[in-house]
Image (cartoon, rainbow, N blue to C red):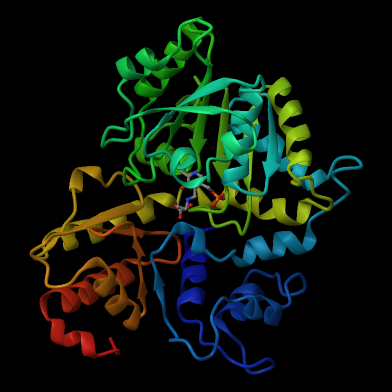
Amino acid sequence: MTKQTIELEQQAFHNFLPRSEGEGKTEQDVLVEKNGLSSLVPGKKCINASAFTPTEVSRIVDLRSDTVTQPTALMRAAMAEALVADDILGSDPTAALLQERTAKMFGKEAGLFVPSGTMGNLIAVLVHCEVRGSEVILGSESHIHYYEQGGISTLGGVYSHVVPNESDGTMDLRKVETAIRPDDDHFASTRLICIENTHNRCGGRCISVEYTDKMGKLAKSYNIKFHIDGARIFNAAVALGVSVERLCQAADSVSICLSKGLGAPVGSVLVGSHEFITKAKRLRKALGGGMRQLGVVCAPGLVCLDHMVQRLDCDHRNARLLAEGLNKMAGLRVDLNSVDTNIVFIDVGSESSLGVEEISEALKRKGVLVMMMDRTRIRLVTHYHITEDDALRVLTCFKACCLHPVFLQLSVY
Ligand code: TLP
C-alpha cells in the first residue's frame, strides 16, 4: 500500500457521511474502484459495515483505543478473495501463510493465529506453566494481571507473583530475581516471566532490546521461560528502530496483536518453538478457539504485515503533537518523556475546572472520544484514522473544555 493509498483510506473514514442503501457513491466506493478492487469488494457492503448510524455526527475522532480501527479496503478485498479450507480438519492455506510469515519475521519456528490478544496470552501462560502449582512473574500494571480477569488462575491454576512495574514499563531486574522461588516444598515453582512491549498502562512505553536481553538471560539462568505480550510490539520496533526479530530474540514466545494499530478487524498471532505451538494449538481448540475457514479472518493480517507497519511512525508523531499541546494547557499534564509511541496519558490536576468525566463528556459532544483510565487520568491512542488535522482539532476541543467552561454548552465544533 502506498502512502497515498493510506491517506485515501484515512480520508474515506473521515469523510464518511452515513447514507441509505443505494444512494450515491462514497469515498470508500471511489477508493475501492481506484484500487481496481470493485469486483472483489461490493462497495455497499463496505459502507454498511460502518460503526456509525445516520443519527450520529458525521465526523468522529475516536481516540479511545487503536482497537477501533476499521479494516482497510485492501483488507476487505483480501478477505473476499482469500483461499480457505477447514483449519480443524486440515490446514487453511491463508492461515498457514500468515502463521509462517509472522513466525519468520520474529525469528521463531512456528506461529498460531488466535482470536484475541487475551487468548494469546492465556494460551502462552498455560503452555509454559502446564504443571499445576506453577507460578508466573508478572508486572503489576501488565495487561495479563490487570485486564484479563485472572484467566490464567481460573482456567489454568497458575499463580501470579506480581512485581511492581516501574514508570517506564520495566520491572527492576533485582526484584524479578528475588521473586524467583527457590526449589523448596513451601513454594509454587516459578516457570515463566512475562513482560509487555509496548507497555499499555505505563503509557505505551517501549522496552529496549538491552532490557529484554537481560530479562531473557535471567530467565534462562534459572531455567524459566520468557513470554512477551507484544500486543503493540510493532509500535515498539518502529519507535526503537529495530527489527521485531532482534527485539524478541530472547523470548520463548510472543503474542502479537493484528487488531490494534495494524488495523485488522480481529486476531493475534502467537509465535514460538514447534513444540510450544503444537501444545498451543491443542489448547486453542479446548478453549473453543479452533476455527474452520480461518483464512477469511487471517487475510487482513497479511495486509497488516505488508502495509501497516512502517506507517506506525505517523501515529507516534501525532501522539507527540497531542502530548506537547495538551501539556501546555492549564490543569492538564502530560509526562512528555513517557510518550514513546501512540499512547498519551493526561493527568487532570486538581486545578482543572473540570474532572475527568466532565472533560470526556464535553469532548464527546464535540465528536472526540477518549478513554477514562481512572479518576485523574485520560488516555488517548492514535491510529491510522487519525490525521495531523485531527490532532490539532482535538487540541482545540480540549482547550475549549478546559479553559472556557462556557463552551461546554456548545455541541458544534
Ligand atoms: N488492550 C485494550 C484494552 O483491553 C485495555 C486497549 O484498548 O488497549 N495485551 C495488551 C498490552 C493490550 O493492550 C491488550 C488490549 C491485550 C493484550 C488484549 O487484546 P485483545 O483485546 O485482542 O484481547
